[in-house]
Every structure is written in structure tokens, then in C-alpha cells.
Image 1 (cartoon, helix red, strand yellow):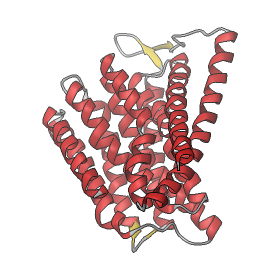
Image 2 (cartoon, rainbow, N blue to C red):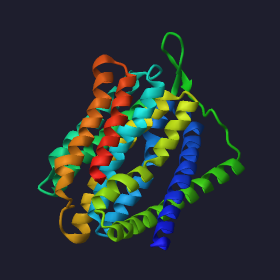
Image 3 (cartoon, rainbow, N blue to C red):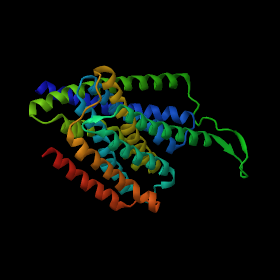
Image 4 (cartoon, rainbow, N blue to C red):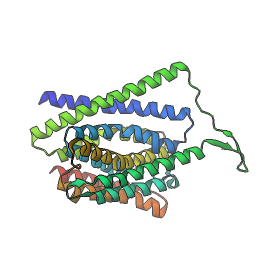
Length: 326
């Protein structure tokens, strides 16, 4: 048991440290091409910080641990929204420009509703997964279109004068170092994810705790730590757009990319749809949607975030975790 716990901690460390380096290198690469901060947050950083969730859930599905795969995906969105985004709202609510995130929040709400529709009777619909996957495609396309619009310089009367040039002109040494760190950090996340799934499953069995609870709590929060690190950094540097954009993008990827991928893996490898415990359908997915609505409806309707949203989300999240564990 001691060795299993140590392997779990090693896996967690590799994911946290690997995710931290991976995000830094991803942002450096994005800045070389002069991509706006809110685009970096909603695409590059979101994909980078969700890599642990993607790998953990796919590895768990390949291993037949569907409860961990679902718990990690749904639990990560719940943790991102009700804990990490809540912290960002509390500290940065007055500086967040909601206009940048309107489309993203609509996509996020749509993703959660679609998830409720395709998760019925203990299985994830393979056909419905295609519908969910469509949301992340639309979201990515919109961000790329916005990035393209922001990649040119204009005169005061709106005329385009020339393409925006990179704000950083890297040396060959910098390119080699950053590329190497990017690849190595991705490898560290991959190894860490495998250790986390295998040791987490063993711990759950040894303690008599369900894989669902392990997936929703320890593994989900563990794989969400890169988002937490990004948010704390954003708070310290007053980069509110990067923080909120990252969380919204990460949540859309978790719901509209990870679960469909797991569904396709299960259907392709085992010949059956992705299955899950009834509690996901009755409790965890509806609560996840509820947290998303609390976080997104006020800025969509009133065009601003409120500190009380963050406080309410944090309190409700810890009550939910306590209830799930007990």
C-alpha cells in the first residue's frame, strides 16, 4: 500500500510539474506568433492544461476503468468551475471583460446540456458523442477566426497595413530548448497520468472507496492543478482574460472532447458504449451543469461577474465533495 501511495504521489508530481512546464512553453510558442492573450487562454493554454485530463481519461478507458474516466472528466469541469474559476471571480471580478467570453460561455452551457442528453441509462451515446464533439470544433473555429482577425495591424481609419509580426524573434538555441522542454513535459504528463490511474484504482480498491469518488475528487482535482497554477499566476499578474479564458476553454474540451474520445475508444476496443454508474446521471452531471449556470448566467445576462458568485460556488463545491465522499 505504501508503494502504491508513493506511485500515486509521483504521478501527481509529474502531472503538476509537467503541466506547469508544458503551459509555459505553450504560451511562449503562442507569443512568438503574436496571439492575443484571450485567444491564448481559450485555446493554447486550455489544450495544454487539459492534457492531464485527456490522458488520464483515455488511459482509464483503455484499461476498462470507465468510472475513473468519467469521474475525471466531469469532476475536472466541476472543480475548474466551482473551485478554480470561483477563486478567479473573487479576486478578478472587477477587471474581467465579459465580452471576450460570451461565445465561449454559450458553448460551455451547450456542452453541459448535450452531456446530459447523451448520458442516459448508464451509457454514453456514440452518436450523441459526435454532437458533443461538434461543440469543441465550433468553439475552436471561432477562436481561430478571432485570432486571424487580431493578427493584422490597422490604421486609425481601419485600413489593413501589414500582417502582425511576432513579438519575439527567438534564436535557434531558444527554439531548441523550448521545443525540448515542450516534448519532455508532455512525456512527463503521460507517465504521470498512467501512474495516477493505476495507483488511484488500487487505492480505491484497498480502501473500499468507489472508483467514481476517486475519479471525482482526488484524480479530478489532481489533473485540474495546472488550471489552478495558471489561475494563481493570472491573479498575481492581473491577467483576468487569460485566467477565465483558460477555464472556459478547458471545460469545453473536457466535456466535448474527452468524453466523446472515451466513448469512441470503448466502442472501438470493447465493442460496447462507454458505461458509467447511475450516480453520474442522477447527481454529478446535473450538479456540474448547475455550477456552470451559476458561473455563466450572470455575466451573460448582466455583462459582469460578481464576487458573490465565486463565494457561492466555493461553498457549494465543498458541500458537494463532502456529500460525495460520505
